[in-house]
Amino acid sequence: MKIDRQILAVAITCGGLALPAGAVQLCTFDPTACVAPTGGAGDSQRTENRAYLGLEWSLGGKVKLEPQFVLGFRTLTIKDTGDVSGGDLGLRLKLFSGFAVDSLRLVYVGGNRDVQANLGGGYSFSNGTPIITGGIQSTYSRLGVDYLTASNTFMPFIQFNSLKKPQRTASGGPLTCPTGYTLTDAGNTSGVGVGASGSQVNEGKTCANLT
Image 1 (cartoon, rainbow, N blue to C red):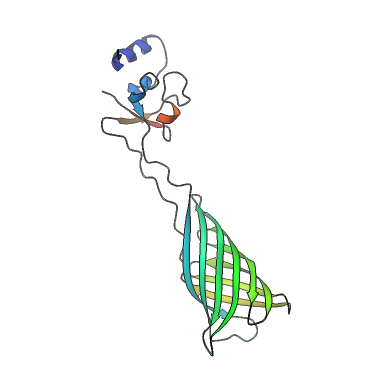
Image 2 (cartoon, helix red, strand yellow; image 1 turned 90 degrees about the horizontal axis):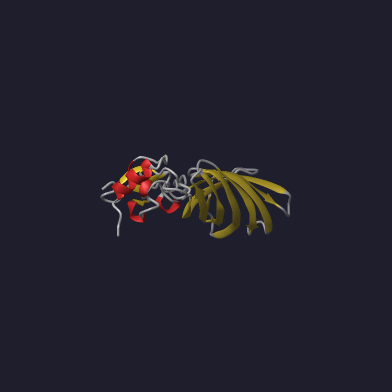
């Protein structure tokens, strides 16, 4: 026989137990009395994959007015703290004064949503040598330097690309309850006694059926 919730609440209170207000005190006696609210905290992290285009000018020695064309792909893991990490693969092409593949670079990306450091390596086809590369990427721009291992030469560069600021992780929105339930403090969230258990709690709140 189902015991009326209000009668049970009075009986428990008279027994001298310190209980949270309302129907929360009945959670462990009647599993349907409390349910976990939905919403709240958003994703702890998200993955962002983005192809991009760019133009790059070499700043080493005599500055060339003709840029190289850049085709790239970047993948990032973005945390709710704003920290990011991932990888970037970029292919440099010479389009002016004849088509040719200039170089290929693969770099690690780490930092935050505003500024990311790049560090990695690749191969320069135009110079016939492996390269070590590093740089700083911000919104739509990158400043870096290539080290040509065969000739011990540093080649700084500036690049403008289509990489915008990484997006934030998704927000979960406000806590909400089903129809007929009221959002209230969860009380004892340890599952011991008469408070709401872990499965009935979200961010310290529970949805209580006060009817």
